[in-house]
Length: 292
Ligand code: C2E
Ligand code: CA
Ligand code: CA
View 1 (cartoon, protein in one colour):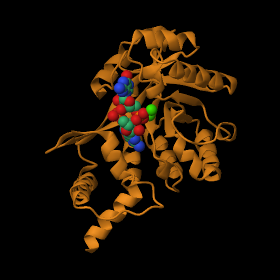
View 2: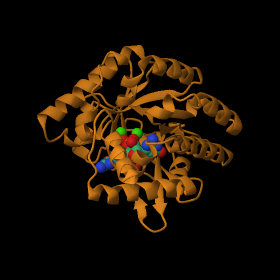
View 3: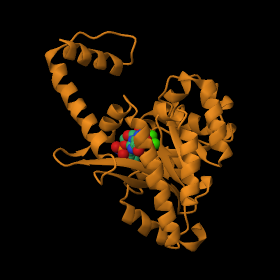
View 4: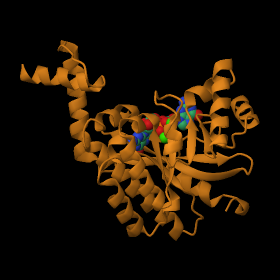
């Protein structure tokens, strides 16, 4: 009974706290899967089951790669590839998300150091961090230590956080972000436009970039509403002197529309899917010199 109560509590927490859930038998199946994923993650996070892929960010005008976004992959020995939206949500329930974030930072900086040793001209790598990690006490000391360890300057690291993170403890966010900025690390707001937060945070926080959520980008050449939302976000960013990245660009017509609206940095399958580390390195080494 206690086990079932625990499962129902877990579900209630997942539904955003402040509610209750009655135990249903099918919850047990979902929960046991989550438990086993959590256990497997804890055990294998440091193994090669977990690795990063790198999706290029493209400056279309200059035809150059201006950065990568590091995205975590989990190749489970029995279940095959597990989607990050699934395992990140489970990790976010516990301090696993901090271990995962630290792994992403560590792997990204190690990769930059390796590419530099190979003589490649570096571009920044953006890492996705959970809100829990952002407001934790361990983030800033860890980043400092890692930058020093790999001898990489903060300008080659970027942090992506979703809007939702910012509503919980804005004062704490302001303090942490000020420290992040003091290390020369850029901060992007991910999935911009999908949160429910007030826009006033945009002037209170030291942000650098807004990333238009891919749901708007993917419909911008189909529905008038999405076109208007993209145009409004681009204008907002320009007026606030923020950079803008359109993510999830899949077609030429989306690209043309967004370019006409004034966006010049793009990410999406139209250019590249997330690349293996080898392919990302090959892309860096094939860059025209003018891009450096
Ligand atoms: P996100 O940060 O918004 O990442 C963009 C997602 O869109 C990635 O999915 C990427 O593969 C996908 N994508 C990129 N271009 C296109 C496109 O043209 N079309 C479509 N349909 N999709 C595109 P992915 O890798 O499955 O990651 C899903 C989410 O999981 C990410 O969304 C991010 O929120 C989270 N995530 C992934 N890796 C990490 C990580 O290392 N740490 C944390 N905290 N979250 C991560
Ligand atoms: Ca992201
Ligand atoms: Ca996103």
